[in-house]
Structures are given as structure tokens and as C-alpha cells.
Image (cartoon, rainbow, N blue to C red; front, side):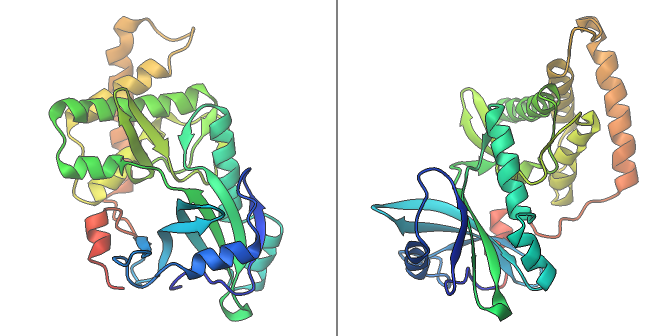
Length: 287
């Protein structure tokens, strides 16, 4: 799918302040250069699949009286049942919207959902989710860039603390991997989640923190043991409640968690991401 289609466009839902008409969306999309990212209005491909297809774009859209920096996620509606799910509000995009709303009510930073629309002819129909652009680099990009030891340790603690917050708030988050966590500030260190699909109420397994290990390992950035330890200590500290063991048992808790996490990693094997998450690799992909 080369770019979001503009014909036969209908707006499905929108956030407050984003009530633009179908005609305004069409005009904004048609002003974008979807081929040349270096053009004044060029769109950047954020996620290129192995087959060269791109379904996630960053673009600056002229809507109303101002330009807005957004991310557009394109999902083909290539079957009758995919179209039915879109009509019923049961697509991945609507699940991401609901997940973002739930996280925002609990005080988490997320990529704000702005609009969903359907467009395209019967042969190439698609649903498009528009979310706000979150300024900053992902935790994975920072690991790849070579942080100072101090900042590496701070990032590891922040990731562990975020997983602890999910558990404390009674939320299960499906995909909080490092490429989905944007560092929006360092003093204090803040993380925003940009993929909020399938967030639900429940008790998150503490071993889900291994999701923060698999992705960097799969792209040759296996976290050092010192970083793993800091993330696990932050998880243990933040998950503590009134029935938790006293502080002097923290090391016992972390050793137990570490052993269970290592067992999960061994069962999983060497992870290889389907879509390479680092920008340098994406830039070199075939268009």
C-alpha cells in the first residue's frame, strides 16, 4: 500500500478539536508528497515490511488554520469481513484508540489518537488511524546510539518502573517493547507509549518485562546484566504493596524474578523482528 488513499473518504471518529470534514482530510492528504521524503511536504516511512510495503507514515498535514505533525497508520480492508470489522469498530485501530484512552485516564503518556477514517476504492480500501506525533527518540534508538552509563542506568530503571506502574494500576499492556517507548524527557526521565493496542484491565505478569529484552536482543543490542538488574529492581520496588516482603528481601525477589525471566528467554529462543525497528535500517530499506 503506497500511501493512504484519498478517494471516497469518510470520517469514522475524531478527538475533540479534530472535527475536520472529509473534504478537508482529502485536501490535506493530497498536499503530501508520499514518494519523496526530502520534499518540503514529504512523508517519512516509519515502518517498512519485509515485502517493501509501508503502513506507518509520519507527515505534516495542513488542517484548518494550522499544520499538524501526525502519524498515519494504514490498515488494508481487503476482505469483506475486514470491512465489517471496520464498520463495527473492531479493528486494530479502534483497539489502539480505546487503549490510549484507558492509559490516559490513568496518567500515562501516550500517542494521542486524533481521527480514524476509511478511504479508497473497493479494490484498495483501507482504514487509517491518525495519532499525534510524539517528539523524542525511542528507548531502543537510545540504546543503539551509545548512551552514557548514567543515562543507560536511568533508562533501565525507568523501563522497570513503567512496568511496575502498569501492574500497580491493574493494567495489562500487550506490546511495551523499547521501540514503542519514546523518551520524552530526561530530568526526570519520562516515557510515552506509542502502541496502545489491546490494553485491558487485569494483572500484568511481571515476566512480561522480558518484552523489553527480546527486541533489543533481536537487533544485536542485548542489554547488559547491570541494566537488567536495575530494571528488575525498579519493577520489584514499584510493584510492592502492603503485603510485600520487607526491603531487605529485595535481592531475593529479584533473583527469583531473574531466574524465571531467564527460563522464559531460553524457551523463546533468538528473537528476530519481522519489521526492523531502527530508523537507520528502515532508511536503507527498498522503496
